[in-house]
Amino acid sequence: MSSNKHKWTSEQTYDLLQAMKGYRPFGIDKHFHMAFILERFRARSKMDISVDTLWDHIEEYYDINQLTKREIEKTKQKTVEFSL
Image 1 (cartoon, helix red, strand yellow):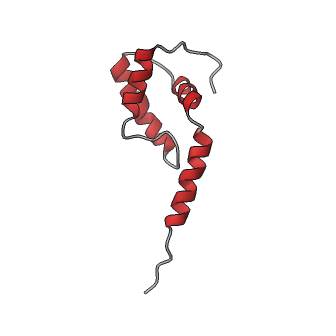
Image 2: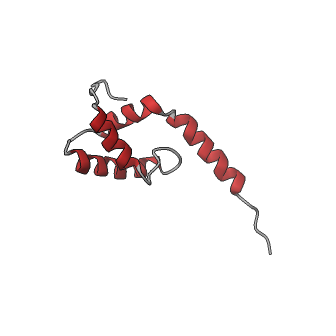
């Protein structure tokens, strides 16, 4: 993502995890969820950090593409044909 590497502290990582509560940065709505995560993180940490920097840090811990594929597969499995 971004070429500018941010040096994360444990407090900043904690703030990010707290900001992620209730939001998933993967799946169909990942960009909407990330907008909320970014807003919450900025409010908690008082840092003006880019969304690319957050993506980079989250992707150090999670394989976002794989989680998104799993989410889409789960959604497909839940789809049921409706008829009267």
